[in-house]
Amino acid sequence: MPLERVLTKRFPWCEEWEAELQELFREYVKTKQRQNVLDYDDLLLYWAEMMKVEEIAKEIGERFDHVLVSMNIRTPTAFSPRSYEN
Image (cartoon, one colour):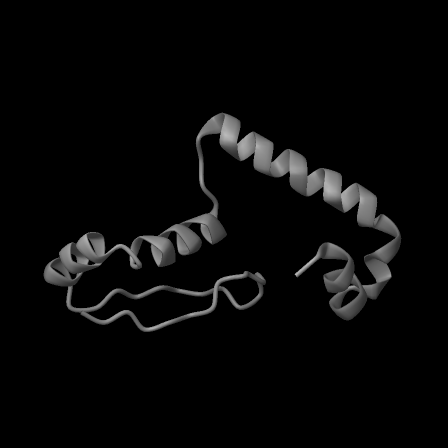
């Protein structure tokens, strides 16, 4: 969802800061990439993508009966919880 829409829909009091927020997010991503780090949202998204790869999903499924993902509901994320089964 584009930032403009998110601000309008959920954070209307921040709409005047759209350009600054775009720059902040851009720099945040650059810094993460430069430091080779992932944040919590990245971990969830990478996990979901890895589970689409049959060999990886199979290996994880053989190692674990269940995987618990703790979601902090105060932190909005593009990730939506799903059940991954063998």
